[in-house]
Length: 267
Image 1 (cartoon, rainbow, N blue to C red):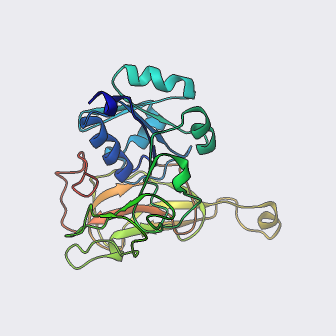
Image 2: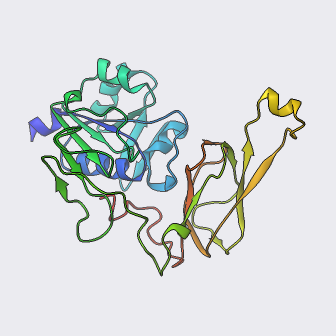
C-alpha cells in the first residue's frame, strides 16, 4: 500500500474520463496524483470534472477533492493535505519538474500528439488514436458496451466509434462548434430543452482584414439542440472553441439523477 501511496501518477486531461481515473486512483490508495489541464478547459460534464478547479481553485467529485496549483512547487503540499492536484502548466514543464512513475493520457484527442512509452515507466492511453506497445504500454477501451474497460497490449489499437446510442439517437445528441469563436450561454446543465431551441451562441473571432471587408464586430451564430431532452453536458460560458469542438450533449431520456456523479463509463 505504501508503494501505491508514494507512486507519482500524472493524468493529462481533467474532463469526465480523466476525473474518473483520478478519483478511482485516490480511492485505491494512490496519494500523489497530479492532473494537467489547458487554461480554458473544454469539459462539458463540468459537474463531475476536476477541470472546474481551474476556475474555482478546488473541485470535489463524489467525495474526492482536487485543488488547483499555480506553481508546481505546491503539488506536494496539496498531496500532504490528502487531496489531488491540478495545474495548467505546460506539459513539458510538468514532466521536467515532476517526473511521474505512471502517465495516463485521458485527453481523448483521438490522435497521437507525440505520446511515447519513454515518457514514464508506465504509460497508459484512454481511447482510440494510439497503438499499445508502440505509443504506450497499454490502451484502455472507453466505448460503452461489453468491452468497456478492456486493456489492449502488444500492437493492438482501438477503432474510433460514434457516441453510444440512446433512444435511437447517436450523433444527434452531441452539439459541436461549427466555427471558431467564443461560446456564450446562459443555460445550465440539467435544464430541459426542446429540439431547435437555442442554447447559446458562438461569437466569431475576427481579424483586421475581416473588419476591412465590413464584417460586423458582433458577428455570431446560434448553437441549437438537434433533439429534445436534458442538457447533460455544456461548456462553461466564455470558453474559446475551434471548429468541431464539443459544446455539449443532450440526454433524450430526460434523466437528471446522475448529473452530479461520475458515470459508469468514467469509473
